[in-house]
Length: 542
Ligand code: G16
Image 1 (cartoon, rainbow, N blue to C red):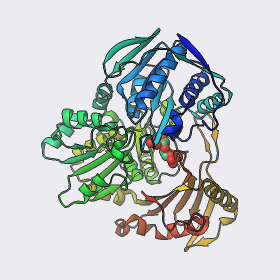
Image 2 (image 1 turned 90 degrees about the vertical axis):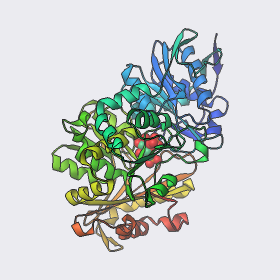
Image 3 (image 1 turned 30 degrees about the horizontal axis):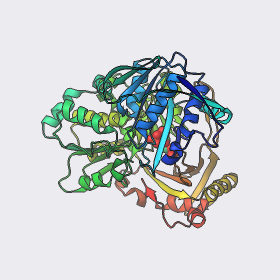
Image 4 (image 1 turned 180 degrees about the vertical axis):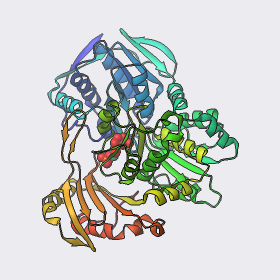
């Protein structure tokens, strides 16, 4: 029987960079999840007769939330739900299932790289029929629905057994419990030269993949160890846990320190990689050679044609604005389109759908192509393995060759986390006010060439997005960008993105923080970060 539950709007149910992220206890509070799910359904014009994909990264409250979403979808008239076994689906695998089954969209439960557990974070995002995150227009409609909600519908029904593959029923709604890995693994085999990668491993190539106790464990074990023949144990931390074993599933040198320690050991394997909570981010590291996400994107742009799925060459590339300009230099050399979008994978969707680009990337450890409409951690790892198998060069040598060819965009991101929200807002507001007067002024020896606030006009659908980061450009090609994170759940995170282009072949091997020392000083002098936050140094440098 369908129950109609009266409710009232809950303030602040507004999607950030990627869906709604809150502390887990918020999501577990009475009506919180239900209000948001009903608002999604209301915002997309109802569920009647529709099919959706449903799954998440397995974090605490994943399974319970799935049962609630199933009961609500059934009560709202959905025809069918395709659910990952045990409630698991990586974000890229969910995107693929939405496209493969031509569904009306999907619900992905994840707070990505944020920690999991009852005292950590949870999240929910809605992806559309193209497999990509809801566009700004749709998230705005959902937000409006959260502000007007007066009731939600839920079916009185027993929990569904999520562990058994196959078909089942809830009320009139069909439920398919599917293997989370099989379809995704099949897709990867259409894109990459599995024979060449298999031969690489057979020849003694060694690798460690850190799944960080998150969702990519089963995907990586099946693809790397079962299909590609990497020895058992290549995948570490490969069993998903509800709290990521107490860790922070963010694939960067800080949080993936276990892998970094292995990769800097004299006996390090040839190749290291990691992925995040929901499997859309990646980290690439060679023996003693960490590759920044911006450099990884540029190298892939230069060499993607070595993978069968991209043998025709790329149609174009896109990067988020704070991502370094390294990929732009490759695009220019290849004579292909290059787009600069706001932060958030959702902004790549129109360009991918229109085949204007087929490679996208972000400094926040996201890389992907038009095979799905999300960034894809394992895709990036397989792309690197494919390139290494063809070029027969180490990660370090590949990057050195790349920099010699295109120059090096020294790059670093400094994060100041859990800053008081008022302090962070005022810092940004005051800097915004200062921007017009900065031109011509010199800070730490660097003269400001121009300064502005980034806004984006989508070349495909014409939509306009403003307020996307404060940019300061210096003579000589250095750049500082400041923006507030849209994915945190406590206070504000100030992100400071630092970049400098180096073309001198003799100066390409420096430590990034050293190479950026003046840019870092100039950023602090202009934005008064340490004075206003009281922090002597950033919490995280990536
Ligand atoms: C999300 C978005 C990305 C974005 C990242 C960082 O990633 O999908 O497009 O670059 O957040 O956003 P922010 O700088 O606002 O924190 P994920 O992996 O968290 O879903």
